[in-house]
Image (cartoon, rainbow, N blue to C red):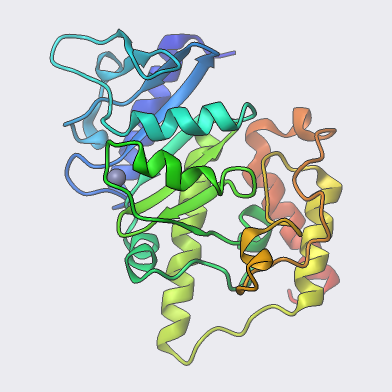
Length: 273
Ligand SMILES: [Zn+2]
């Protein structure tokens, strides 16, 4: 179990990764970690997330009010968006918001990431919807995001960026990397004639394996709002996806490794390796 100082150090490390991978410009982006029901650590506003030290990190309560912040630092102006995720998703321990280039390009074009094009993205994300545009720092973004929270662990923010959340800071950050990689592959394949999508059967098998392993978090299933609205979605899951809790205790931070090993197994089965 990490102590508070170690969590702050990890937040600085994740800040460096977010910045160095070009997922934010200047002082953009913010992320938070839940300590308990009424204490949350969050990044400060107005600083580059690539150059933080532990004393930059602020602490807020469940309403986003400051509990502790060193002189010159105040919590992110988008903390309300984080708090809405924690309120609606008690399983979430960390929230990451960034403006990765390709994912944000799709968010600006108003195109959700719904095409099943690679096993890792299908297993980790399913599809990534777009939350309606809201003015930053107001309740508009939390309100827009809310409708997607029970179905997805990653959401694009229209004309803005992306939001991911998971059971640890590392896993929430990895989801952001996965969203961006997925968006980039989709964009690049569109330049050379468009992607070949995985078949319904291939997607179903990936979803089935995901359920068997009981990966934590939410994932599109029959309840996928895109499917309900008759829009394109990877909705062949059959229901119950991501709700299995049994194996989650043994997964934790091994989430990414697990996705990789499951993917390999499925690809072997499908003769894709
Ligand atoms: Zn933003």
